[in-house]
Length: 115
Image 1: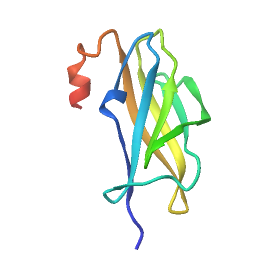
Image 2: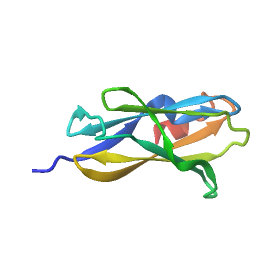
Image 3: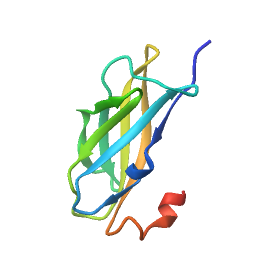
Image 4: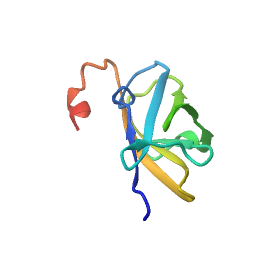
């Protein structure tokens, strides 16, 4: 029986402050258990226009069981970002997509956080 794998981003990773370095964080699960990848996890970040912000294959950091982070440099333009986390879980190559949006103030975009 194969397990279902999924990823859940940290709430703090969904809304980023403009011009501020931010830590993006995601936890990977197998069933209900936080699960490490079989090897490294990489990240690719694109903006809403499809432009590369962080190149595919960039290494992320494991910070706890199943938790991976990436330190994103401050971004000058307000934009929505798509983050693709890739690795191998249970001997299968998988990619999981999370989203983030940049804002002038983390409190001025409650609609995005409620999505």
